[in-house]
Length: 348
Ligand code: DAH
Image (cartoon, rainbow, N blue to C red; front, side, top):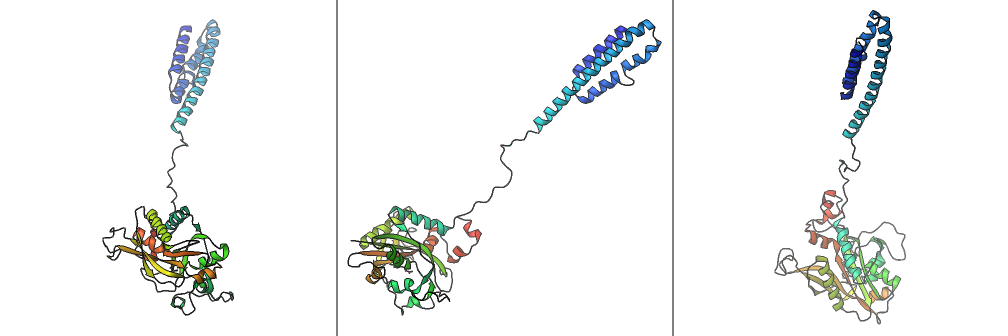
């Protein structure tokens, strides 16, 4: 009997040692300690044994029972811990893994802003200061100060947006500036000579719109006032500006032109970059692209700005930033630039 007990004990211990999961452990528990388990059967059979045997077998059986119970309990907590560890390993959450959400869309810089910024950078490098002026301007700054007399065609109701507001009495009616040139007078008044400025800005014309005309567009004004300033400087500055802007050698040429605020006045063309002066549709088969108006600042304009025209002279220019952008990116309808259509801006 004693031998049998020891065999059961040893077998139980071995099975507990080998068991790999909680379910199997449960089966072992039932097998040895359950109501119909091997040790329970022996305890049930004690009544048929002699007193002598009872005294030995009873406590021995109980001892084995307690021992197996304890071993099963230990094994159970080992197996549970292993199971949790395994679960955790399987559920590893990599906090450094890249997210699966779609990235936020990045905004786009409008081509007008882009080219304006490039122009500002190039002129700044050449010692120009970037100036600003009001878009709502007085008739005086927009016209009179620039030597544009009251009967000049540019002052026609067809070209200019007038504001209903009559508050500015001193300088005439208020208008939406038709060009950036009024900032010439404002800057001369404020800073005097010498000056070296550019003025990028928005201008307005009361016009019927089509693919090449809009009521709103952008210009860049330039003004240099100093002693011993000549048109040769203007030619050099513009050739350098365009060469840097296009990243390619650009030539410029002058043609006579007329603007009330300059004398002599001229038009500046640059060599066509598309065909290298051979002639193409962009340059209308002339090899040259009309670019801007310019000239030596009219003495009346210097006077309006409070500058002594016997001591100082200078030149001024004005070009269409909008047209430059259209040429650069091959945009054939001016209206898309101000449309606010993001399908347009997204392309840049
Ligand atoms: N203000 C003129 C325009 O809007 C452009 C212009 C021509 C500006 C000659 C100038 C200049 O400063 O000298 O058409």
